[in-house]
Length: 207
Image (cartoon, rainbow, N blue to C red; front, side):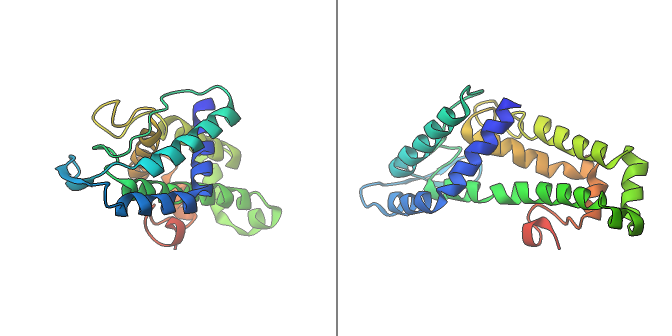
């Protein structure tokens, strides 16, 4: 629970400061003395470049988050300017995808909430379908959340613990790995009932 809570808190803080981080990313990328090397990182040929400004800002956000949540579970490693996160632009792109991961999950939960209203239950066969498959709406909600919390933050999604694991970047890797397998989940039909088309398809993953 603490691991998931602190990860979501960190993502919130990073997104809150995204404008500042983007400004620092531009400065790091365009700094004349901050040269880059073209390297094959395992994800194709990438421009590997130090990110001093983004690194300072990201560590400040991390320390602020650690202070706010108290006990910190897992690694505090922030990959920047290496094979995992080659440059500042990749860092920005990764965290811009947080909403693509979370919005569809939130929307599915909101859909389940809507099925519990008296008007919806009287006129909506979706509630009956969910209850016939999962017992109750609440059980379906708990199943989705439990699976998301357990499997989207389990260090999966890479060949080794250094590339995924509990490091700051690896938490996103694990979440995307969960997204890539959601169609195999027993609750995937609930996603479809709510209008889900994909984590990258349509506004917020919905039509």
